[in-house]
Length: 220
Image 1 (tube, rainbow, N blue to C red):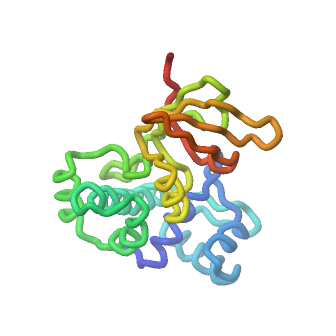
Image 2 (cartoon, rainbow, N blue to C red; image 1 turned 180 degrees about the vertical axis):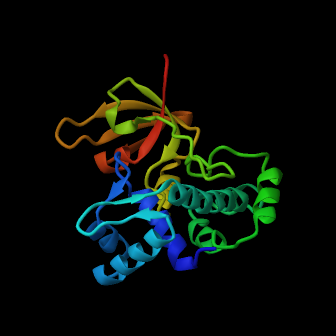
Image 3 (cartoon, rainbow, N blue to C red; image 1 turned 135 degrees about the vertical axis):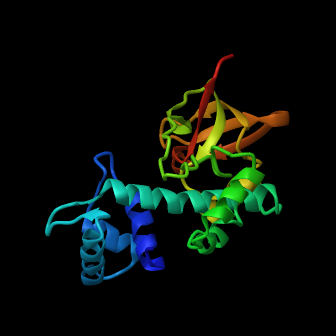
Protein backbone atom coordinates (compact mmCIF):
# COMPACT_ATOMS: atom_id res chain seq x y z
CA UNK A 1 0.00 0.00 0.00
CA UNK A 2 1.38 3.40 -0.97
CA UNK A 3 1.25 6.47 1.26
CA UNK A 4 -0.90 9.51 0.49
CA UNK A 5 2.21 11.45 -0.60
CA UNK A 6 3.34 8.62 -2.88
CA UNK A 7 -0.11 8.42 -4.46
CA UNK A 8 -0.08 12.15 -5.15
CA UNK A 9 3.30 11.85 -6.86
CA UNK A 10 2.12 8.93 -9.00
CA UNK A 11 -1.04 10.72 -10.06
CA UNK A 12 0.86 13.91 -10.87
CA UNK A 13 3.45 11.99 -12.88
CA UNK A 14 0.68 10.35 -14.89
CA UNK A 15 -1.09 13.63 -15.57
CA UNK A 16 2.11 15.44 -16.57
CA UNK A 17 3.49 12.71 -18.81
CA UNK A 18 4.13 13.87 -22.35
CA UNK A 19 3.51 11.77 -25.47
CA UNK A 20 6.59 9.68 -24.69
CA UNK A 21 5.33 9.04 -21.17
CA UNK A 22 8.21 11.01 -19.68
CA UNK A 23 8.33 13.86 -17.16
CA UNK A 24 11.25 16.13 -16.29
CA UNK A 25 12.17 16.17 -12.59
CA UNK A 26 12.27 19.96 -12.59
CA UNK A 27 8.78 20.09 -14.13
CA UNK A 28 7.45 17.78 -11.43
CA UNK A 29 9.10 19.89 -8.72
CA UNK A 30 7.57 23.12 -10.04
CA UNK A 31 4.11 21.60 -10.48
CA UNK A 32 3.99 20.25 -6.94
CA UNK A 33 5.72 23.26 -5.39
CA UNK A 34 8.21 20.93 -3.71
CA UNK A 35 12.00 21.39 -3.65
CA UNK A 36 14.09 19.29 -6.02
CA UNK A 37 15.95 17.28 -3.34
CA UNK A 38 12.63 16.20 -1.81
CA UNK A 39 11.26 15.18 -5.22
CA UNK A 40 14.45 13.29 -6.06
CA UNK A 41 14.28 11.43 -2.76
CA UNK A 42 10.69 10.39 -3.46
CA UNK A 43 11.57 9.27 -7.00
CA UNK A 44 14.29 7.02 -5.61
CA UNK A 45 11.79 5.55 -3.15
CA UNK A 46 9.18 4.93 -5.89
CA UNK A 47 11.92 3.45 -8.08
CA UNK A 48 12.78 0.96 -5.33
CA UNK A 49 9.10 -0.02 -5.27
CA UNK A 50 9.18 -0.65 -9.01
CA UNK A 51 6.74 2.16 -9.80
CA UNK A 52 9.05 4.69 -11.49
CA UNK A 53 12.04 4.39 -13.80
CA UNK A 54 14.53 6.82 -12.27
CA UNK A 55 18.06 7.67 -13.38
CA UNK A 56 19.99 10.82 -12.49
CA UNK A 57 19.66 13.62 -15.07
CA UNK A 58 17.17 11.63 -17.16
CA UNK A 59 13.40 12.07 -17.57
CA UNK A 60 11.11 10.11 -15.27
CA UNK A 61 8.89 7.38 -16.60
CA UNK A 62 6.21 5.39 -14.81
CA UNK A 63 6.61 1.61 -15.01
CA UNK A 64 3.64 -0.56 -15.98
CA UNK A 65 3.00 -1.10 -12.28
CA UNK A 66 3.27 2.64 -11.71
CA UNK A 67 0.81 3.42 -14.50
CA UNK A 68 -1.64 0.90 -13.07
CA UNK A 69 -1.30 2.35 -9.56
CA UNK A 70 -1.80 5.90 -10.85
CA UNK A 71 -4.78 4.81 -12.95
CA UNK A 72 -6.47 3.25 -9.91
CA UNK A 73 -6.08 6.49 -7.95
CA UNK A 74 -7.52 8.49 -10.85
CA UNK A 75 -10.38 5.97 -11.09
CA UNK A 76 -11.35 6.58 -7.47
CA UNK A 77 -11.13 10.34 -7.96
CA UNK A 78 -13.31 10.42 -11.08
CA UNK A 79 -15.88 7.95 -9.75
CA UNK A 80 -16.19 10.09 -6.64
CA UNK A 81 -16.70 13.24 -8.71
CA UNK A 82 -19.44 11.53 -10.72
CA UNK A 83 -21.13 10.27 -7.54
CA UNK A 84 -21.05 13.72 -5.98
CA UNK A 85 -22.66 15.25 -9.07
CA UNK A 86 -25.17 12.57 -10.06
CA UNK A 87 -26.27 11.28 -6.66
CA UNK A 88 -25.58 14.11 -4.22
CA UNK A 89 -26.38 17.05 -6.47
CA UNK A 90 -23.07 18.91 -6.28
CA UNK A 91 -22.10 21.21 -9.13
CA UNK A 92 -19.28 20.13 -11.44
CA UNK A 93 -17.22 23.00 -9.99
CA UNK A 94 -17.61 21.79 -6.38
CA UNK A 95 -16.32 18.24 -6.47
CA UNK A 96 -12.56 18.29 -7.09
CA UNK A 97 -11.33 19.05 -3.57
CA UNK A 98 -13.70 16.50 -2.02
CA UNK A 99 -12.55 13.82 -4.47
CA UNK A 100 -8.91 14.70 -3.72
CA UNK A 101 -9.50 13.45 -0.17
CA UNK A 102 -11.69 10.43 -0.92
CA UNK A 103 -9.34 9.07 -3.63
CA UNK A 104 -6.90 7.95 -0.90
CA UNK A 105 -9.39 5.60 0.77
CA UNK A 106 -8.20 1.99 0.37
CA UNK A 107 -11.52 0.13 0.15
CA UNK A 108 -12.07 -1.56 -3.25
CA UNK A 109 -15.57 -2.74 -2.30
CA UNK A 110 -16.60 0.85 -1.54
CA UNK A 111 -15.65 2.09 -5.00
CA UNK A 112 -17.04 -1.01 -6.72
CA UNK A 113 -20.42 -0.32 -5.09
CA UNK A 114 -20.18 3.34 -6.10
CA UNK A 115 -19.45 2.27 -9.69
CA UNK A 116 -22.45 -0.08 -9.65
CA UNK A 117 -24.79 2.56 -8.25
CA UNK A 118 -23.77 4.96 -11.00
CA UNK A 119 -24.41 2.39 -13.74
CA UNK A 120 -20.71 1.90 -14.58
CA UNK A 121 -20.01 5.33 -16.12
CA UNK A 122 -17.22 5.72 -18.68
CA UNK A 123 -16.54 9.42 -18.05
CA UNK A 124 -16.53 11.82 -15.10
CA UNK A 125 -18.52 15.10 -14.86
CA UNK A 126 -15.79 16.90 -16.82
CA UNK A 127 -15.70 14.41 -19.69
CA UNK A 128 -12.49 12.67 -18.63
CA UNK A 129 -12.41 8.85 -19.06
CA UNK A 130 -12.75 6.77 -15.90
CA UNK A 131 -10.07 4.05 -15.71
CA UNK A 132 -11.13 0.42 -15.32
CA UNK A 133 -10.49 -1.63 -12.17
CA UNK A 134 -6.95 -2.40 -13.31
CA UNK A 135 -6.16 1.27 -13.81
CA UNK A 136 -6.24 1.17 -17.60
CA UNK A 137 -7.42 4.41 -19.18
CA UNK A 138 -9.08 4.42 -22.59
CA UNK A 139 -7.91 7.46 -24.50
CA UNK A 140 -10.66 9.40 -26.24
CA UNK A 141 -9.79 11.68 -29.13
CA UNK A 142 -11.79 14.90 -29.51
CA UNK A 143 -11.42 18.07 -31.55
CA UNK A 144 -10.46 21.32 -29.86
CA UNK A 145 -12.98 24.11 -30.15
CA UNK A 146 -10.05 26.38 -31.05
CA UNK A 147 -9.53 24.35 -34.25
CA UNK A 148 -13.05 25.06 -35.51
CA UNK A 149 -13.90 27.69 -38.10
CA UNK A 150 -16.98 29.92 -38.59
CA UNK A 151 -19.99 27.75 -39.42
CA UNK A 152 -18.62 24.67 -37.66
CA UNK A 153 -20.67 22.94 -34.96
CA UNK A 154 -19.17 21.16 -31.98
CA UNK A 155 -20.85 19.11 -29.25
CA UNK A 156 -18.93 19.76 -26.02
CA UNK A 157 -17.69 16.46 -24.55
CA UNK A 158 -14.84 17.35 -22.19
CA UNK A 159 -12.88 20.17 -20.60
CA UNK A 160 -9.09 20.10 -20.37
CA UNK A 161 -9.00 22.58 -17.51
CA UNK A 162 -11.30 21.44 -14.70
CA UNK A 163 -10.33 24.05 -12.13
CA UNK A 164 -13.21 25.45 -10.11
CA UNK A 165 -12.75 28.96 -11.50
CA UNK A 166 -12.89 27.85 -15.13
CA UNK A 167 -15.92 25.63 -14.55
CA UNK A 168 -17.75 28.48 -12.82
CA UNK A 169 -16.83 30.73 -15.74
CA UNK A 170 -18.39 28.23 -18.17
CA UNK A 171 -21.50 27.87 -16.02
CA UNK A 172 -22.00 31.64 -15.99
CA UNK A 173 -21.82 31.54 -19.78
CA UNK A 174 -24.43 28.75 -19.89
CA UNK A 175 -21.91 26.25 -21.24
CA UNK A 176 -21.97 22.60 -20.09
CA UNK A 177 -21.17 19.12 -21.42
CA UNK A 178 -23.47 17.96 -24.22
CA UNK A 179 -24.08 21.49 -25.49
CA UNK A 180 -23.91 21.94 -29.27
CA UNK A 181 -22.20 25.19 -30.16
CA UNK A 182 -22.00 26.92 -33.54
CA UNK A 183 -19.00 29.11 -34.29
CA UNK A 184 -20.50 32.38 -35.49
CA UNK A 185 -17.23 34.28 -35.84
CA UNK A 186 -13.51 33.86 -35.17
CA UNK A 187 -11.16 36.82 -34.77
CA UNK A 188 -8.04 36.56 -36.93
CA UNK A 189 -6.12 38.80 -34.51
CA UNK A 190 -6.44 36.83 -31.28
CA UNK A 191 -8.43 33.69 -32.12
CA UNK A 192 -11.34 34.62 -29.87
CA UNK A 193 -14.70 33.15 -30.88
CA UNK A 194 -18.32 34.17 -30.90
CA UNK A 195 -20.50 31.11 -30.23
CA UNK A 196 -24.22 30.54 -30.56
CA UNK A 197 -26.03 27.73 -28.80
CA UNK A 198 -29.32 26.77 -27.13
CA UNK A 199 -32.17 29.24 -27.53
CA UNK A 200 -30.02 31.63 -29.55
CA UNK A 201 -27.68 32.35 -26.65
CA UNK A 202 -24.39 33.96 -27.60
CA UNK A 203 -21.03 33.81 -25.81
CA UNK A 204 -17.59 35.18 -26.63
CA UNK A 205 -14.59 33.11 -25.53
CA UNK A 206 -10.89 33.85 -25.66
CA UNK A 207 -8.54 31.56 -27.58
CA UNK A 208 -7.22 30.16 -24.28
CA UNK A 209 -10.72 29.14 -23.22
CA UNK A 210 -11.43 27.50 -26.60
CA UNK A 211 -8.18 25.50 -26.28
CA UNK A 212 -9.62 23.94 -23.13
CA UNK A 213 -12.92 22.81 -24.67
CA UNK A 214 -13.05 19.47 -26.50
CA UNK A 215 -15.84 17.85 -28.45
CA UNK A 216 -17.21 16.07 -31.49
CA UNK A 217 -17.81 17.86 -34.76
CA UNK A 218 -21.45 17.86 -35.84
CA UNK A 219 -22.75 17.67 -39.40
CA UNK A 220 -25.15 20.30 -40.72
